[in-house]
Image (tube, rainbow, N blue to C red):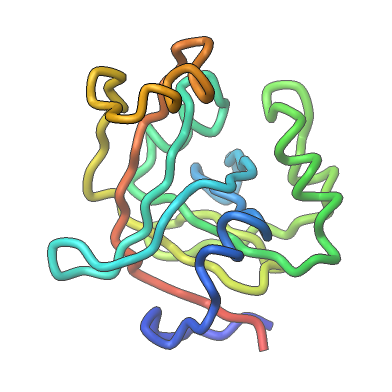
Length: 168
């Protein structure tokens, strides 16, 4: 069962949680949402608020849902869900009902933001800011050639963490 917590009490190492454990970024409504796996992001304080930063390429189906929503969620799972997370990172919601395939139960957070009951940690984020990455601003040119051969630069979203839930 997920319990509402103060985001300041989160003890996770954000480097391993984001970079190794992976996240699901989800947006839409309980009835119609999409989710995607992410291993890039950040947590911190900006403008005096607890925030999460996520990066989404425009060709991802979830991009459309984040664009149309006031909120997005970040769900973190334990290792037993690795196969489901892999499916969410390799299949498009345009082609497959990933949520059904993974056996996830959709729950609503602040503003109707969808997240998954099976997660061990959930952050509900209200969008504050977005910006498209600009290749002219890369100081290390290897970033552009290594990560953007298709020139499909991420859109950066900063969201205020308005709710947090933890299993246990």
